[in-house]
Length: 208
Image 1 (cartoon, one colour):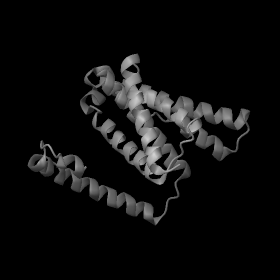
Image 2 (tube, helix red, strand yellow; image 1 turned 90 degrees about the horizontal axis):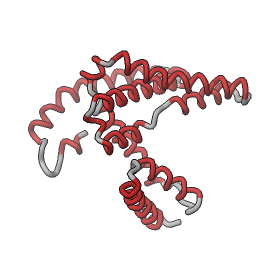
Image 3 (cartoon, rainbow, N blue to C red; image 1 turned 180 degrees about the vertical axis):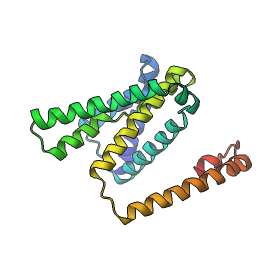
Image 4 (tube, rainbow, N blue to C red; image 1 turned 90 degrees about the vertical axis):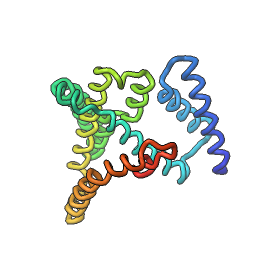
């Protein structure tokens, strides 16, 4: 299927999802996922290189925005609740899936570990979208949910890294460069935001 037809159909499905969301009062993220399943299975839509790039970029952007919504004050005040909810939501599906896949379904150990990791993570982008749509990001419960999701996804990232990452000299280089980059961003960002922020063209967003 030509790329412009893929883009047209996806655009129509996204618009249709917005209409259904408004009429039914259901989060548009959930509607779009459902329409994506329909598009992939019945309309024969398949990922294209540009679509894979956009989805990856959008996932990173949404994760960044979700991380920006984590209220550190609430996180410190409600650390016990956040850690308990986030920890349980990670370990329960992680360990439960591994046990089922390895001892009951008789998968290989690596396959069982991958299954556990896959089912232990949250869809942070969906959670964030739902909380923003419902206005819960302004309330304490919404901030606790965001902090809990952060803990869950942190557990997933750590587990994935420890189990499957291949550590070598480049790992140390990556850590070193990341530390320097984060330090520089902390120094540069306030100037960029103060000097160029709050404009219609939003250069600060482009900088990020």
